[in-house]
Amino acid sequence: MTFNMLVVEHLVEKLMALALGLIVLLVFSNVVGRYALGTSFAGAEELSRLLFVWLVFLGAILTLRRRAHLGVELVQARLPRPARRVCAVITHLLTLYALWLFLVGSWVQTQIGMSNYSTVLRFPNAFIASAGLVCAASMILIVASNLLKIVINHPDAVMAGDPPRDAAVPDGAAASVATHGAAK
Figure 1: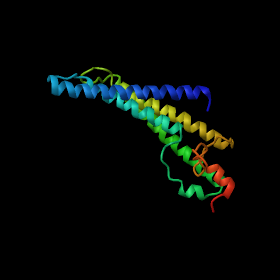
Figure 2: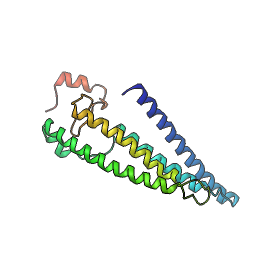
Figure 3: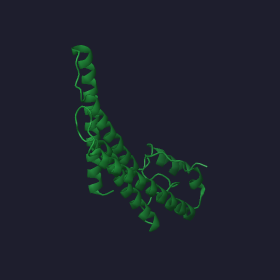
Figure 4: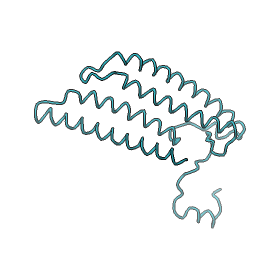
């Protein structure tokens, strides 16, 4: 992973932490205000919803980038590597199609949201829909990049059924394998 990608991931993590902190602060202060003072901040619910939507979509981007989404690889793991490459290309193309539909739908919703405003804070609803737009565009770049790596047989290509590259090895496990051999 390049230095620039690490900086971007770190920035996204900080934005997500900030959003989560603001959500907790808004909701907690609203609850305390409502029960202790008999009043509350009217826009807290709208603002926390906006932040939550962005938090979820930014998290989805990071999860895809880190290849941490859940996947069922039972069949692909048993295939020989050339067949896994074919399956990976097909899977990536289908994923790109789904993400394209997501991108187009988010674009339409963002355009519609430019003329619709939230009830209390009066911000354009496009702020919410644009989270899907950013998510879809980012995911398209991530999936297309990995698809290109698969097609050109780049060593960094990730396919279903490949063993994890950065799995943590418990202390002493390497010495145990070296001493006793691999498990049968």
